[in-house]
Image (tube, rainbow, N blue to C red):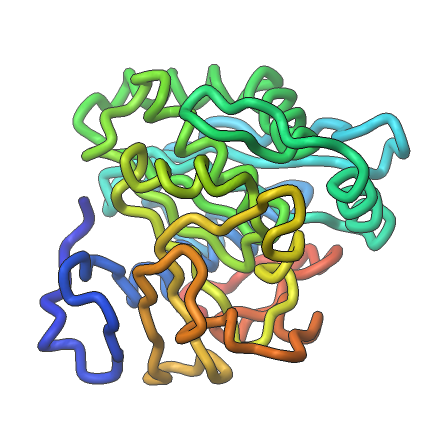
Length: 294
């Protein structure tokens, strides 16, 4: 969908799968991650103009209460058309409190997975959060921009909880024929496991250009524990076993769960979850990404 990089010409990357080599590292580093960090700001429009200049058409920023446990347990996202990318982009924010993270984990441990429209089963708490947000303005803003720019592609992204919501959104857009799968991309950061193996097995049939970017020993991609209630990651993982500085190498693993990527980590940590490409965003850092960063 985006401009492709020929595998053999990418000097710093190590590829395990040469057959599906379309991950755009520059795009992830210089555009997608900055606008994902901006999602943590309560007034994201102020951030977007700092990060992107005037290269966009803003749709909406929506925030909802994710569960009945606390009014502070919120899910949030925004919609934007980025003209240089020729894409309508849906961006989801991650969790903003330790309490919300605990609620998510408790629900996952005590509730069964729920059927998903595109085959398999998924986490019910996440599915509920997606539906609430989608119907609280994300859908209307997305369709408005999609109709305004009919030649634009669709990109969905997010960090942590937002990564899981992005995964569900992209798969739903494809499964319900709202967006053709060849006009759709998913880039996520620090994504937890979202559904069972059937969901994972079918994911690339729905979203062929899907990349789960993982920083070093980030603990969240190890949650929920592999095998618990059948939870399995969908393809493709992009693993940076380093600090993600400019020029650092990465590996693309074609398997759903690969010991050549982050599944090889024996002692994951929270420290690597909040920082990708040397820019931090986790749990309430509401700063904007300056132009030209990271």
